[in-house]
View 1 (cartoon, each protein chain N blue to C red):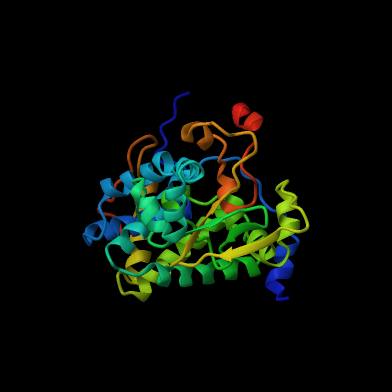
View 2: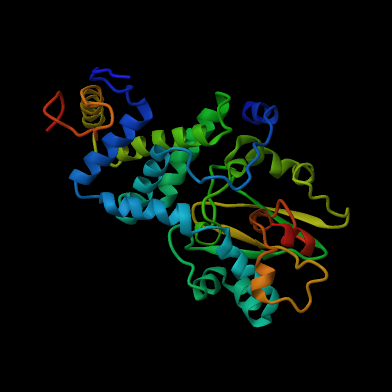
Length: 206
Length: 123
């Protein structure tokens, strides 16, 4: 096929808007294109829930670390080398036989980036943001998480200043497993509180 | 219950299997620009969250509050707004530059990188 027309498909409006912002901000010296690419790469490839899983697995296996994590989440997480934007004030909340914690940002999508990466699409959605506060058990059930009646469900609303990391309950039958093995059981949603940590069989399947 | 909630009530929770963080490059770029401007001290994250949250509330009210695309459209609108409110760039600058990029896009051979030339608003 030989054609000689000059026009490519028109650039979408969103692309034009972002290109305009970027080129003007680069000219003003406020941002640098290479640094923008690095940042995107970081969030696409390096910062993600594996960081949080390592934190949780350590808390499960190291009582002193767990205490530090509950006392000062940000510092204990920084100890493991996980720092950066939106991690300035992270509070760790622990699930027990009596209490189950679940996290939302009702305003927008505040989320502990250094340990979980960027939020999943459902976390950002209007139905999750509005419903989990009012009917947490119903929302949890949609995620397949059904809790005993006597477990208290606490919903934490994140803000621009305060982010939450849920420490899920350590699954039964994992005595003797190493922190690295346990980290495989800590799925992303369990650190938001919508699911439980995977059991050993699920962990092997993943 | 606000009308906001009623609308949201009728939407299903979107599912997500740990897919890509960004669906399209413009979403990643808008994200990165915001984080960098915050790092530069152009605005605080609380200021950002207020403006971004207001965009999300507006979109939710209009029945658009449910996917990555909607989410990043809100993000982009909030970014343009905070940049204007903080006097970092003017609306006119943004509009002129957008037309320059549109012109450049229309006058670039398919497969060639699009660069700003001497067209309207170019430099």
